[in-house]
Image (cartoon, rainbow, N blue to C red; front, top):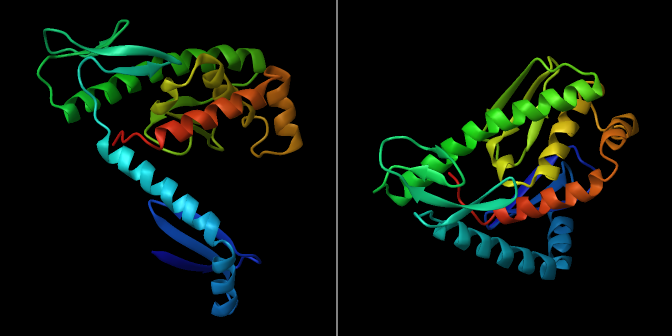
Length: 221
């Protein structure tokens, strides 16, 4: 399936998501030029569509069961049954027995959210003092593609999915958002703030991208 989106842009661009090819084109560009561009990228499109289809297949097969291991701060921990009605984390993601795979996944997500609120609030407070900034609040959301965000009012949001990353990567995202309290952009001044705290931030960025690629094959809905 091919979707043509016309905007005020000046060049053509291709995007593939969930098996759909989207062509973003200038408002008045003739269709024959768009078709010629698509034809010139046929090999790239075929490869990307195949990769997207494989990711979709893996996502559809994704389930969680007792005994499976999932990541917390870069380390793997098992999902375990524990008598009672409580869920939590104590060297395992524990929850009541006899839950269905969907219920197991929902319990894991809730545990991740609880861990994120505590862990990220502590890290924000620590780095905020070091960076001489004062965020208004720290909140946890379920964002899929944005690890964190910072509003003009100083409210910082993090995706609970960040709890799967290792500690160095988590710190990078925290510092990144706190730096926005000084520079609400990605200008050289902004990156100078980040590098002053984390000189190896580019390495951490690459690790974050690797996690993003892995999560693209896992359905945490």
